[in-house]
Amino acid sequence: MVFGIKNKKSAKKLSKQDAPQHSNGNANATARHHGHQTNQHADADPGLTAAPPSFKYGGNVSKRQFDIAGLPVNVFGIDELTPAPSRASAPQPPQVCVVIHLHGRGGSADNEEKIARQLHDRIQRDKDAFQQQHPDAAAYQRDHLVVTFDARNHGHRMTNQLGQQAWKQGNQNHALDLYGMIVGGARDTSFIVDLLAPYLFQHDERTVAEWVVTGKSLGGHSTWHVLANEPRIRIGVPFIGMPDYNRLLNSRTKTSFVTNGPPYVPGSLKSLINQIDPSVVDHESFDPARNPFWGKKICVLSGAEDRLVLWDWNEKFLKELVVGEPSGPRGEMDGLKIHRYSGVGHEVTESMVEEAGEWIWRWGVAGQAAR
Image (cartoon, rainbow, N blue to C red):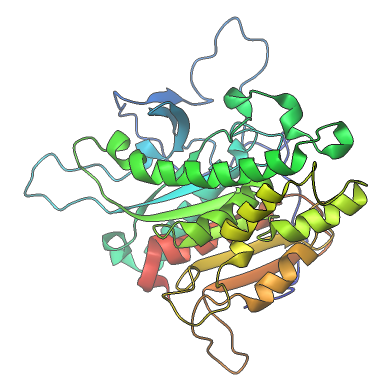
């Protein structure tokens, strides 16, 4: 477990004003008939007045849109996958690691495309660097994709704009709406795990061997639910998120001057929280049969100056959390990393995304070869 690692001075907030990308990715021109391709380098519509967006990282990475039984998802990196062989006797292409990224409250998948592209780009840079040092690495490093989608009541799925707001903005149902979006994001993630591979690889030409979840703020809260409840996902990176909804409610009801009870927090909601929240599972147990976090690889990235998602909502849980047997003189668990970035508030910086990409490459793409 790593606490309080020194923040890199180069960390800065991701913004639309980022300089043009510096990507090592090279897009394959081969089209796939069942996905719609979008790329900022495509010919511009003459009716458009705004320039296509540019990205500092991963700007050349392909982006395709798929409709997964009514849920539109964006898939980054399909064209960059190792080509599948045309002969049955040829060596099979590498297995695939899929990273599912969940966006923040009030945002959308499009708002966080820069995070998705940087994650893909960082993983690719780590793969390339490792292969330069180990020429045979291509034989055991996995291919990778990054997937995004709009959360419930966000983006194209918007049904009630007030439902994104808090009590102070007039939304009496804030506690219900927020928890519903948190839980809904986690369940949508499991839905994608169920059905993405059949939609992407309809000829069984590839196998998804590893699933990863990352999420920002609201998406970070959902990430904890995924890690607690989805056994098929063992790697996760919650950005500026928290695992304890009861602590969030205790704090926010006080600062919003509302009752932590009906009608703002109905007893039925509290009952649900106490059944399914990550904070109420046996996260401190050394019994793998009881602890759903056992064996998982979790990198927690937060801002030390975050005033929206308070560290107090994380601290007790993280001190208790067990993901494996401790080792070394300090009793650390190599599957758990906690980094609070000094001088950073409620934001995801480039340095955070770089750290997340390295973590995903280490545990999900390179595997034993990198350890």
